[in-house]
Length: 314
Image (cartoon, rainbow, N blue to C red; front, side, top):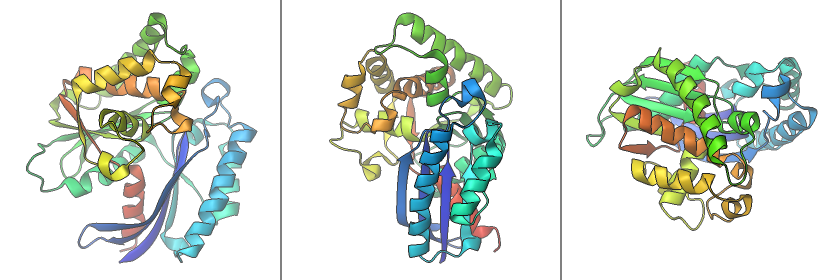
C-alpha cells in the first residue's frame, strides 16, 4: 500500500482525501475524506479575479488540511493538489498558487478541463470494471461549481470536453429568484443547452450506455431521491436515480424558497443557493442523452487524483 493525499480545489468546495492505495489490486482505502465549502469562485465569472475573502477562506481550509496530512504521515512526494475551474480562469491565480505552496509545501497544479475530465473518469469508473449490470461505454458527467466535464470511455477515455457551466457560475450569472421564475429557468436552460451543443461537438453524448453522475449537486439530488434523514455517502454511492425522479426533484428545488431548500435534511448549507442550477444541469443532460437513470458515484476527481499520486512514480 502507498499512502497518498489528494486535494481537489474547485469553484465551490475544497476536498481532501488521505488514503492507502494498492495499484496492483485497484484497492483504495480511505483514511480521511472531507469537504469544506469555500466558494473560491465567488464572482470570478464577473470580475475575472479571485476575491480576497474567497482566497482567505480557501487558505484557512488548506491550513486545516495540512495538519491532517502531517498527522497521517503522508510523504510530500505523494501529495497532490489539483485546482480546477475558478483558479484556471482567474487573472490573479499566481496569488492563489503562492498561498497554497506556502501552506502545504506543494505547488497546486492548475489543470486543463481535459485533464480534469480524465481524473474524474478514473475516479468514477475504476471500481465499476467487471460489473455486468452496467453497459459500457460510460458517460461520466462531473457537475462542478464553475464547469461541467463530459467524458466518454470504457476502460479508458475516448472523448472528453469541459464546458463553463456549473452550479455557482450559472447562479451568479443569472441570479434566479427564490423561487425561480419561468424566465429565470428559461435563461438557465438556454445557457445549459448552448454548453451541451459545445460538448456534443467533441463528445458523442448519445452513444454512451450508462450515465455516471459526480459531485455535490448530483449527490444532493440522490440524497433527496432516497429520502435520507441526513447525508449518507455510503447510501448515495452507486445509487441509481430514475429520470422521472430527477425531474420531480429539480422542479421542486427551482420552485422552492431559500428556507424550504435549507430545511432539506441532506442539503449542505453551502449548496442551498446553487442546487437549483446544479439539478437543472443534470436534468438537461439526461433529457439530451435520453438517459433513463443516473448512476451516482461518490468517487470522482478526488479519487482519480489519489490514484495518480500513487502511480505516477511506480
